[in-house]
Length: 212
Image (cartoon, rainbow, N blue to C red; front, side, top):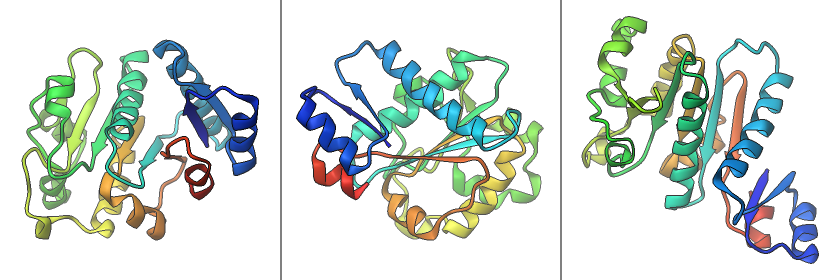
């Protein structure tokens, strides 16, 4: 649990660590420094779980609708992809009612998660390379839940998502999942994932850190 905040008082930092935080980062630090610190901790956790070559999944869970949580997930995915262009990194975006990734990365998603689930029998590396949107700047692949506002009755089940993620593990080196409104269901269901890193987003309040 990494806390990012702007209150650097010793009393507040001590309160965060007592609430269960593993590390603290100053929100006013340069972006590059924050990125490097978070990625270093994530790499350390991933390496401890086993083979460096195995697919790693990062689950970003959020208690509510916060643009900052989405920005964290997207930036994490983009940095992982840009850091090594040979690495195949996928951003699985469960934003509702529609994904803002088109504007954020200047890409045009052609395949959505419900469409991919309907095509499970066809999913292989060649299919993803031809159907997925990909950022030219970072090399990041993008698979959104919805490119436009979708019918809530058409949402995929966690079971179907779990099956899709098992397939994605064989196609990519790293998968970053922004769970958004599905965060609570994902946490309660304990969606399976080997080498899975969970990022719990919360604000700077003591109660929020303790709850996370």
